[in-house]
Length: 202
Image (cartoon, rainbow, N blue to C red; front, side):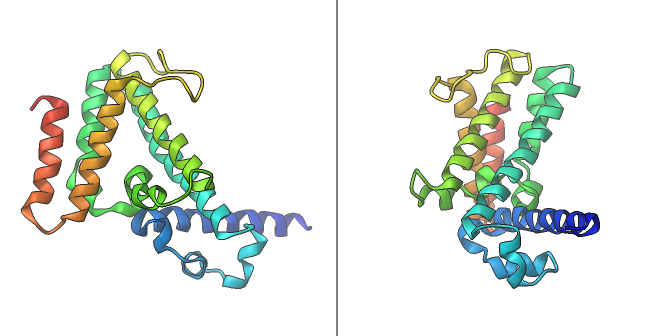
């Protein structure tokens, strides 16, 4: 394969993934079709199998990328904000914002994929991606509490996570799920406000 062709294929592959990441966060994994993703990427449906073995393979790779983007943002915050308490407050405020509620395509995959993954079998590739993604988020939230990036994070999947970080992540994700489900009603913002006050002691 010519160098230009390889580069074009890699570029097309990344464009498909980018659109898939956006669409699964907007519509959930079960609400997105292969033709829709390919059309959004400006490619034909027929070219899909040059890039992915199946829709499930696409969803798993796109889901991992979506979680990775959120985790990288949080990791950067941990690394650049000298005060862990300030970093935590900034993250929580952004996560529980109406902007995050109203822009799911740019939001957290933990919120967008929760319902779809809950209906899938434990051996589904997307289930593994989801577990890995929320575990990493919980571990980074733990780092904010410990004041040291990666400090005290369990090293094996079976190790028990920090209960405080787990409860915090559950509150963040649950509040956004409820806020999106009730958007347009005053209780939507009340969910966000109540969760923010509970986590930040407001």
